[in-house]
Length: 341
Image (cartoon, rainbow, N blue to C red; front, side, top):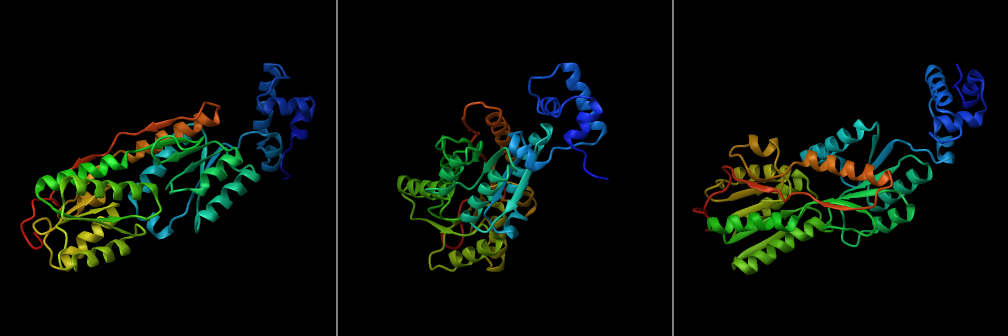
C-alpha cells in the first residue's frame, strides 16, 4: 500500500492541498472546525510528514541531536553519561521530542555531523558537551543558526545557551579537605587535556597547592578509560616519592586506581587516599567505598533539555549555573600514616 499524501487527505476532506498544509502545520488560513476535521482524516490515514517536504516547509522535526567525540568503549561504562542522557531524554520525551545520538571519531567529524543534520533538516537543536579550549564547534554551530545548549563551560559561551557547574570550586573543595587531613602530596588523574573542565580542575589544584604550600600537586591526563586510569596510577605509585592522595576525574578511573593500589600492596586509605570527581553506584559498592563529589547528573540533563527546548521555542539564550557538587566522605580517605608520608 502506497504512503498516504497530502493530496489523499485533501481528497478525503474535500478541500485544497493548501488548506491541508495550513491545518497540518498549525498555520492560519482554515477554520478551527476544518483544521480538526483534516487532522482526524490524517490520523485515520496514518499520515506522517515526509522528511524532505518537512525540510522545504520549515516545519519542526521534533528531534534534537547530540554527537559525542569520545571512544565508544569508555562511554559504554561511564555512569555520568548514562545519567546525563537519561535526564535529557526524560524531559524531551514529555514534549514528544526524540534525542538523536551519534558517536563520532573526532571534533572534525562532530562538526561535519552537525552540518549534515542541519542541511538535511534532521534536528531542531543541538546539545554540545566536552567544551574545549578554543573550541571550533562554537563558530560552526552559530553559523548554522541552529538552537543549541552547551553542557559545561563556565558561564555564557558566545551566543549559545549553557548549563554549567563550577569545576574550580569543586576541585578546591577536594584539595582543601585532603590538606586538612594532612596530605601534602596530591596527584590528579585527569581527563582529556584539551577539555576546558580538565584545565580548570588542574589549574585549581595548582593554585591550591601554592596557597596551601603542598609539596606535590601534579595532573596526569588520560582518555577517561579504566585502562589509562590504571596505567596512570601505576606510574604515580611507582615514583620515588609517591603521593599520599590521588584525585580521579571519573568514577571509572577511580575504581581502576583502587584496583591497582591493591595490586601493588598499597593500603587504602592508610597509605593512599582516593577521591573520585564523580559519584555513582560504582564508588559506593567498592571496598573501601570511595569518597566522591556528589551531583545530580540526571537533573543536569533535565535542565539542559529544558533550556534547549526554550531556545527552540524562541526564548533568548541564557546560562544556568548548576549547584556545585558536594563532597561525600566515605572510607577511602583518611590522614596519611603509611608509605610516602
